[in-house]
Structures are given as C-alpha cells and as structure tokens.
Amino acid sequence: MKDIRYIIADNVKLYRKKQNLTQFELAEKAELSVDSIKRIERGSRTMSLENFMRIADALAVPLSYLLYESLSEIPITERILNVLNSKNAKQQEYLVHMLEEMSFGMDRL
Image 1 (spheres, rainbow, N blue to C red):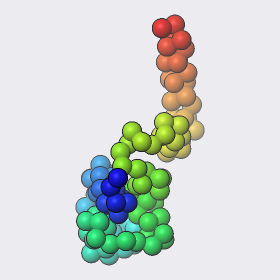
Image 2 (image 1 turned 30 degrees about the horizontal axis):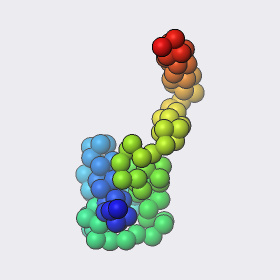
Image 3 (image 1 turned 60 degrees about the vertical axis):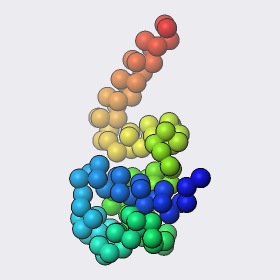
C-alpha cells in the first residue's frame, strides 16, 4: 500500500489540475503559501488537519476523496451524494429523475 502522504499528494494535484488551477491559485484559495502546496503535492510535507480541510474546501471535494488511492475505491453512494450535494435543488430533482428512469429501464434486463 502506498504511503498516505503520496496518496494525498497525488489527489491534491489531480483535483487541482481537473479544475485548471495553478499551484498559486490553489494556494490563494486555501490561504496557504505556494511553497506549502508544492511540498504537499510532492508528498514531502505532512499537513495539519486545518490545512487538509482548507485544501479540500479550496478544491470543493470531500476530505475523503483526497484519501483514496483511486476513484473506484470511493463508495458509489458517497460519489452520488457528493454529485447531488454540489447541485441546486432543481438540478438535484433532474438528476434523481434521470436516475429513477434509468433504473426502471434496467429492471427489465
């Protein structure tokens, strides 16, 4: 199993790049120094729980997403809830409706 520092490092970098953020922009959003972000992404620095929370908030991802080695390890219900929680009420209704319709069609298979 990979060292947790490197798992977090890889995930911080992954989610930062998915959002097209530079290290500087992430540092600003998380209210940390650019040097701290660089060291965290290299896995050469441990961080406090407070800084861990700041980074997760800045990336708009649950803390747990930064702890898993791959997206497939995150429980599907957690992934679905995270998607729903990131949407407004109207979007949530639409997504739930789509899921229900798709589920109904699968019952016939």
